[in-house]
Image (cartoon, rainbow, N blue to C red):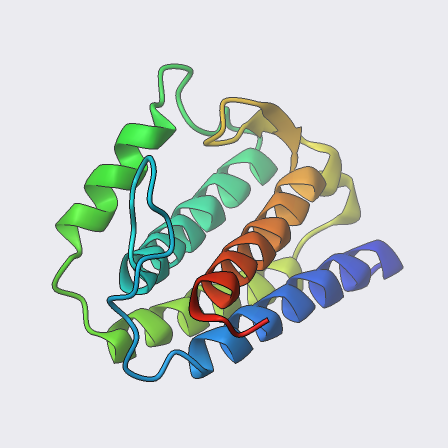
Length: 158
């Protein structure tokens, strides 16, 4: 495995460790509000969003690495995020945490098989931007960090 892939994996792992550390401290506050505008999600809803988006971004990464387009040009990220959280509203915290662990492990295993040249393949990310596989991996790590920070701030964990 290349040093570049190792570094990307290390960044993803550090971001996920931070997210897990924050989620480990939620206790009984899963229904506390994190956002008051836009989606107006609770901690639990943010966790569901993270679960769904992690799975979706893994699928996008793999498709782009295979030379496919990524998400369709007309993909509506806001609508997808809202509906996917609504559809999985009954997911339990243990199910959400297990799914996050599984999607992380799946991505780690996939990265072990990736050829470094595939890091430069480009495709459309859910944000609508055309990004390389390497850039999407950075987006995933930043996504974990950003939501972890938002949850920590909302719960006074900083």
